[in-house]
Length: 586
Image 1 (cartoon, helix red, strand yellow):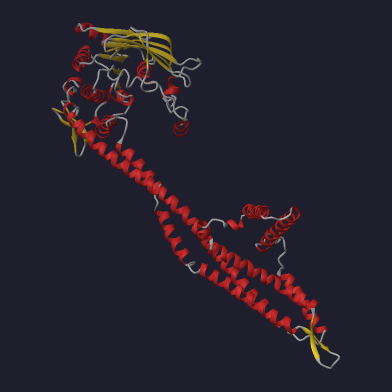
Image 2 (spheres, rainbow, N blue to C red):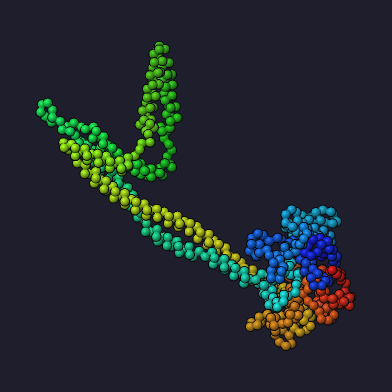
C-alpha cells in the first residue's frame, strides 16, 4: 500500500497545499520550519486519524504548551490557528485499487469517508476513524513506532538504549516496562486492603465485648415486667383493705368500699398495666415474627368474609322458612329476627376481637403516677380509719427507676454495638473492593511479565539477529555491530573495541539509531506500508548519501518518504540513477 497524493487543506501550517507522491523513494526537501514533521503527522492522520484527548487526559496532562512553546498534544498542536477548518485528503493505492480518504479532524459529526475510486462506492470502516482493519492490518501505535523514524533529540543518546529495551520488553519503543510496573505497584499500594483488615480485627474485638448486651436487655425487660405484675397484684390487695369501717344498726361492723379511693388506685396501676401489656405484646410480636411469615391471616379475621357468612346464613334460613308451611307474616318475622340475631352476633364478635377498641388512650406517665400517689398519701393522712399502707408504691417506683437507669445504659451499649456492626459492614465491603482491585492489578502485573517474555522471544526470532545489519554501512565502517555489555549496557563494537552508545557523538548516535530502526522496520513489518524518515540523518559527503540510498533500496519497501533538509540527497539520487520522486516544500 502506498500514497499517491496528499491534500493538506487545513493542517498545521499548511492551507490547500498538495504533495504528489509515488511508489519507491520520495524525497520531500524543505528548510528548517517548513513543515516536514507536519507532513509525517498528516500521513499518520490520513491512515489513523488524529485523536483529541479526553477531558480526563487534558486534566491529567494539561492542554497548554511545553517548555519549547509547542502544544502538549498532537490534536491541538496540528490544529491551524486563525482558521476554522481542520481537514485533509489522501489518495491511496492498495491491492491494485485506488481509494480517496477524506477527513475532518474536528470533533463531532462524520469525520472520515473512504471512497473506492473505481466503483464510486463508499467503503465502510471496521474501526471508527481508522483504516486499520479495512485497508490495512497494522494498528496506529505499531505504525508510528516502526514506520515513522525521527532523529534523536539533542543529548538523546540514551534514547537508543531506551527504545531498544522497550522494543524488546513491550513490543513498542514508546512503552517502558519498568514505568508500567511502577505505576501498577503504585496503584497496588494505594489500594492496599491491610489497614482495613486491621480495622476489621479491631472492630471484631470491640464487638465481642458487647456479646452479652442482648441478653442483658432481655433480662431487664423481664425484670420490669415482673415488677409491674407484682405491683398490680399488690395494688389489688390494697384495694381490698382500703375500705371504710361502718357500724351497722345491730351493732356489728362491716366494711364499705370507697369507690373514689379505688378509682385512684386504678389510676395508679394504669401506667404499669399498660407498660406490661405493651411489653408482652412486643415480645409476642418478636416470638411470632417467623410464624407470621408462614401463616396466612385467618378467614375469621376477614371483615368481608364475616359479612358474607352472615348474609349466607340469613339466606339459608330464609330459604328453609319458605319451604316450610308458614304464613307469610310468620316467615317475614322469622327472617327479620334471624337477620337481627346475625348482626348482633357479628357486632359482639367484632367487639371481642377489639375492632371497637380505641388506640388513642393516653398512657399515664410517671408524673401521673407520682401525682396520684401523693393524692393517696394525703387521703391516708386525712382519714385515720383508712387501713392501708402505700409505701409499697414508693418502693416500686424506686425499683422501677433503677431498672430504667439500667435500661438506659444497656440501650446505649446496644446502640454502640449496632453502630460498630454498621461500620464493620462498610469496612468489609470496602476491603472486598480493594482486594478485588489488588487481584486485578496482580493479574495485570503477571500479564505484563508474560507479554514481556513473549515479546523478547519474538524479538529473538525477528529483528535481534539483524540488529547490526546496517550499522557498518551507515557508520562508515567505524562500528560493525550493536552489542549488550553487562557493565556498560548497550554498546557498539568496532575495530577500536566497544563504546557505550551514551558516549557516541550526536552524529554517530543518529546513524546507529537509524541503522537499528531500519533493521527493525525491515524484519517486523507484516505488510507494506509507507516508511517515513523525518530528518533522521545528515550527510557530510555525497558518498555517504549514496550509501544511505543503497541501504534504503535493500529494505524492499514499497514506498519510502524521506523528509529532509539535506540538499546532498537529491544530487546523490541523480548520481546513482535510481528512480525517485522529488517534492520541494516552500
